[in-house]
Length: 374
Image: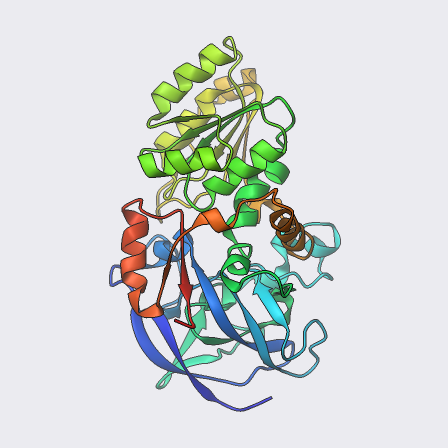
């Protein structure tokens, strides 16, 4: 274990200012902590919510919660990894011992309680800018070349998996896949409507198709994303919800869809209402996306919900268990059953991070990736 070092990182000082590059000091890892040299970081929409003011975080903050790299050093009491190990960081840690973990719900591990502040469990921070303490988003901060993270966030990455692919399975892939497979519980023959075909929605498409859905219907206004959705397994794509609804009515002979999964860049009341109306009796609406801060997005008529016995539920990390599902998804990628290379539309340098998020906002990317080695 070494002492304090310097690292280059993309930070957000406050909403609506974008990302700023800064040289930070980084403390040595403490108990149950490791220092990671990240090689790749995924550009998830959740980080954009920070700069748009939609995520209630502690500013300033080091961005990034999808990352893969190599363990450089470890603090006291670390047992899960050793220096030199290749790892993926799960944006929600999994200690394996708390009540959620021990009952099969690692996506709600209590050690993830400081995601919005980046503060470690001992009440301190590892990133510093002068006399300011900074947390990493989700206590990671993968937009930094080097970071200190919890050992409970580390999942092994096999030697044959590229870092830029490994980074994706720390959040977006299991969140989307799990929203269909675990949270929604899609079954063979189902009709599924997915609203939003970005980095998370594309994997909801893959999950629904792999689970055996007969109709995987995608709604997205961006033609490029609709075209890519077909690559990932969508059977039908539409630019607007009304046309998709008409198709579902026709193709199901009026029974409507079994599932609606909401994965747009920003969740709105309109999207939720469209999703509720497209599912039939016993249908389920799964909410995965994040809405704007201060806006309530779920306003539904109780009678229509009860009479159709519709369900509306949230999904955190797609109900996935990091220690099981991340290796499983990489195994499906290795066997050719899960498309991950196709998710990466473009790779960027850290210096170009604002351009990368501009590309995302303009619908040019399914997933951008920062490659720290460039």
